[in-house]
Image 1 (cartoon, helix red, strand yellow):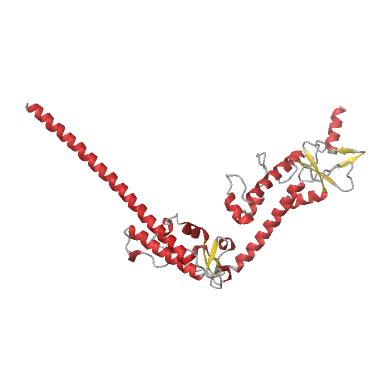
Image 2: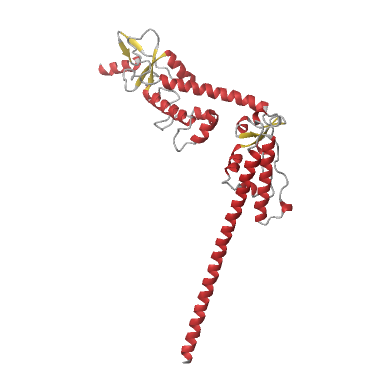
Length: 350
């Protein structure tokens, strides 16, 4: 009987311990779910306050910002996230020691004059004074609510709402950066325009040339491999510029700002001595050149394409190192490299 009592007490202890563990576990799970539910309620309340504030104070503009002399610049992405009322902006509002809007790092410093570089200016949105003040006030209120929920002392919250205020008349643009940007963009536009024109001129159906009958002006042979790779590249570039590029490209961003998203090197991606079959040849005719700098493939229509001097001149503008392969016609025949022909004839007569 004593042994049975010992086992009974032991079993009761084990059962009681298991029940206690299960109880603690369930309490923790319940507390976690309760905290999560309370957090959802707090988030919903903050979003509702934001939504009503936007509708009440920010949409009653009264003036058009672009026409107002006191229009204020703000970062468009942050503004979009804010007005969506789906983003908590924790990465911005959750930092008690920083200003809410940080514009200072976006300014350039050209000869002591601060202003937004053109590319940064294009990433913003102009708000009327009323909307800007309402925007700051709503952000401030929401930041205080968020940090209060996290137990942060109000005294520890940074009082600065915006480190640098940018208006239509102050800090909006840097004249030096603007001039540099205009020159750069103009150069890119001209380069892209020439590439686009050459893309269409190198279509198979465009201006079909017969060197034998069309001998009024010089005719040049160019590598079909070059033509194929060049047109593929330009087509991809044009699709990306209008936002219909491949999923791997940043097509959405490019479509918003067009050519501004491309660097000049993006428009000239060809490399020397590349083993990539789709790489554009900077010398244009490397594939068809012989050791004498001419070509034995000028008669091979599978390898060469005939173009007039005007088109080859456009090619030279984009590819200054393009090797010329003029097509010579003698007695109604297209002549290959004379040195190669002489060597072949010499070996044939041995």
